[in-house]
Length: 217
View 1 (cartoon, rainbow, N blue to C red):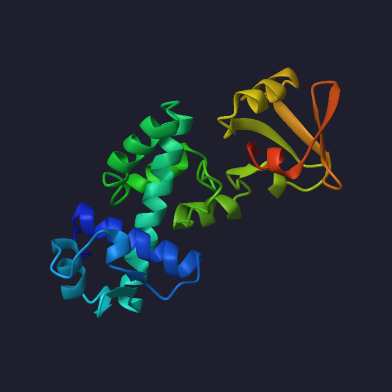
View 2 (tube, helix red, strand yellow; view 1 turned 90 degrees about the vertical axis):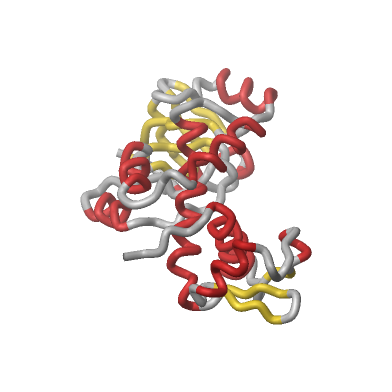
């Protein structure tokens, strides 16, 4: 039976996973996390041998990596949930995601992931560590929601959502008919992303293509 971590401990693990597994650092200083050595979350994780404290620097131990990975998965699924289901973005969406992530334990994260059709990235474009449900979905041919940049030429899917908060970009995409629910077919990926929506063909650069998310059938 896995240990039920406090919210603070989960937040520390999340920060350590991002720093070490995604940014290539060997740890994080206590000061950067606004923590002290006697912080309850630090002490909790140290007792479990999930982290190591050397001087003023925290590092993630191998024993803590599986749980740290899960905390990142839950947080990024919570971000997708607030945007895709509750239509909350910006600071309000971030605040709600921080609340929801601590609720997605046990089988709940699997149910939310399945509800969202196994997304591969969060609204900020960062990867969501896959779960066993994602692997099963890929085996059955359903790979979830991906950025347009992850499609290959001639692939098509339903537009799931747009991640941009820029009003001008949103207006541009809407004028093309790039709206959730519409079908998009990618025809070319270089030198720009060219796709068809309805009977019309459009081209966007890679930056904008990364903000269009497609649910592959």
